[in-house]
Image 1 (cartoon, rainbow, N blue to C red):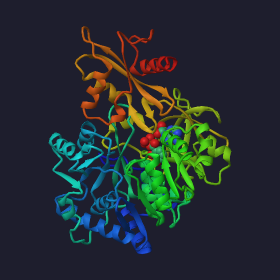
Image 2: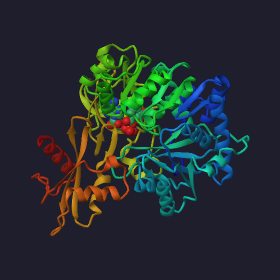
Image 3: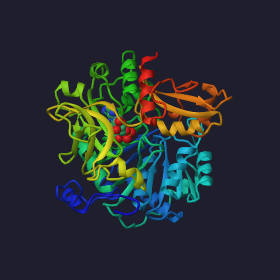
Amino acid sequence: MTADHVLWPPRTAARYRAAGHWRGQTFGALLTSLAAAYADRTAVVGGDTRWTFAELDERAHRIAAGLLSSGLAPGDRAVLQLPNIPEFLPVVFGMWRAGVLPVFALPAHRRSELRHFAAQSEAAAVITVGEHERHDHAATARAVASDVESVRRVLLVGSDEFAGLAATAPRELPDPDPAGVAFLQLSGGSTGLSKLIPRTHDDYLYSVRESVRICGLRPDSVYLAALPVAHNFPLSSPGVLGALHAGAATVMAPRPDADTAFRLIEAERVTITGVVPPLAAAWVQAAARTGRDLSSLEVLLVGGAKCGRELAERIGPALGCRLQQVFGMAEGLVCYTRLDDPDEVVLGTQGRPISPDDEVRVVDPDTGADVAPGETGALLTRGPYTIRGYYRAAEHNATAFTADGFYRTGDLVRRTPAGHLEVVGRAKEQINRGGEKVAAEEVENHLMAHPGVLDAAVVAVPDAHLGERTCAYVVPVAGAAPTGPQLRAFVRERGVAAFKVPDLVQVVGEFPVTGVGKTSKRELRAALAALARKEP
Ligand code: J2J
């Protein structure tokens, strides 16, 4: 344990090593061995770019050397915000070889979020693109650099400066410690801003390796990265890292819509991809009238939010592939239905954990006692790839983890006799907007920064397309009359991801629930959510 990271107790770590879960390999060393085994095979495709494993390896070596000669040092953190472009891979592997830790931001993140990631990690750099989907990422990155003192560099992939860096002569670099932290992922957040999730080479590679096996990736598989690739799901379940690990090709989709995805599936003979439920529903609809040949597609992973039974049943027939449900989290635990599971399990559950050493408890949220088999309870977990603490978050860790190291996922689940988990709800103060996670408190804080707002409570309301969307109840200060559109614009202009801007705003004289006058925000949110579910 260091002040920054809470890692596994030494005896537990020794057990994971003895079991062969942790193999002492870094991501950089993995790429070296992949380049030897699959040199001339295609590693990644996107736009006009098509790189073999050997080319990817060479590029990652050059970028590693370039990052170090441009003033970054091993152990530095850098906020990385890249869309689905082939460069993502050599940049990330270059950072890993240099020992620079990526903090994986999503393209949707804006100034206030990037500022938080940079400040929280004391990042030395922001690495992004100039412009993407009509957003000036370069300007946002420069703004973050002016906000956060530790940020010394803004590096734009695609710029001449970056091309120069990527042409640096490769050199031998010391391999980082495989038991050390390789990167920081982002939590969905529930109490305020996203927490940073420290993942090690050892633990993450274990989850990737097992995901490859469970999802049946082979060297001749082709993985389509449809979701934003820095997210834990398309990164590692089995994701682009799983595809690489298997010697398979990755195709970077610039956008996840059916037209784009189907065009790439046909052109590149994609065999496997992963989507969130609303996207799966859109693809199912579009498949009925597409002229594209989707016959190469074997497996569609669906996760990030609950895939309802009705949608689950339509996926196989509509897309001509096998559905694989995945219930995962950037903190660790990933559950999959298996490719040879009976239909009942594939259609009706979110699968079972990757590892025999994943410990799962389903407990009464109030007492913490294990519930009877088959009953619903709060999911706790610990294991060989689930973190023991967030980065630099001692206070939060005290409640997010049990004293004996179980992570409180905030999910309500039921476990079938055969050990499959069904996600039935959530106890955390988070809205799952079709897989995109919104922390109620973060949005409330943005709303309350408005001079006309006295109090705000953000809750989930059911939505036919997204599963849930956000509704903000707002109480104005006396004499003020902010409108919904004004408040939405206000939140947007504070620099947040568009998916966090409240979908609905209800400006009310007082919170329209009785009996919760001076109770906690949690109870208020629960009462408002119940009310919102009743109202159309
Ligand atoms: C219901 N809720 C789900 C599912 C995630 C693979 C897949 C997804 C993620 C992910 C991931 C769900 N049904 N099938 O990291 O590697 C909700 C739960 C969970 C939270 C985690 C991966 N799959 N969820 O979604 O860190 O509430 O990771 O705790 O973004 O998403 O969110 P996140």
